[in-house]
Length: 220
Image 1 (cartoon, rainbow, N blue to C red):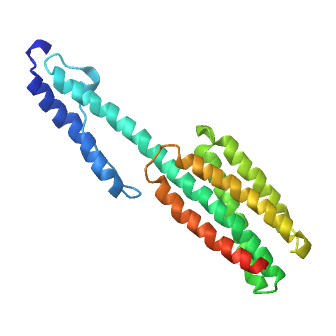
Image 2: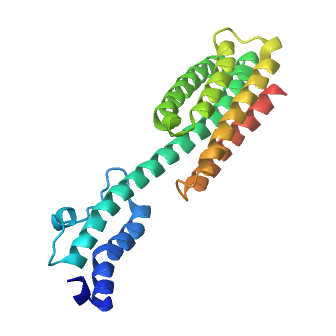
């Protein structure tokens, strides 16, 4: 009966059967790679209960709840990490597109610039599609839509041969795209869904800055 279960026994059972699982999972998470798994062992008594095993059945029920909650948490962290990566790429691509446009105007490896520009367009469309699927239903839909709208303002320049008189306007629209992507990235980073989001964001910003520097060099 419950009256017969001592505090010492409660402490031992909970430390062994649920706290130990949580500590183990916390230690394992930073080392997991794609396809990795954490397997927790539950019991039918965690679902049905058992009058003779009150403390044990309670901890097994807790394991079931913990496993489901952990899975939801890891999925959310993974989606947030992927979203930070994709929105960070949008920042970089906004700058690369202007760089390619200016490079083509300068007649420097114009054919290469054309191929890079086509790749940029495909990547932006792909990233926006992934972002819509991953986070639009999580309350970030307006931010994704704003980024898509600024992208369409850039895309119209990519459908025509480069023109020197349109370079500054393209750059202005690309800066709007950069700002929207940066805003989305910062909101995701501040979401609290994962402590590693800042670590993901920093190198993404560095990639953007390298493209920004190259862009400015071509525009001088």
